[in-house]
Image (cartoon, rainbow, N blue to C red; front, side):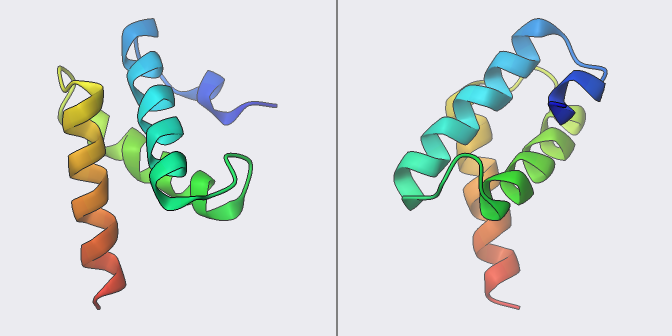
Length: 73
């Protein structure tokens, strides 16, 4: 089952999350079905819930900042 179907977001927001994760996976050379992509998707879902009108590019920047901050701890 696709965990994105369990989230209460608009179709546009889900598209934003999906395109952001695709872009992040491409940039990071990560498997879109892998653990790191799923972790990134979970963070992206949290971010879009607090920034509901964010664009895919903005969400990618927020996600990258969040993940780089987590890696430096």
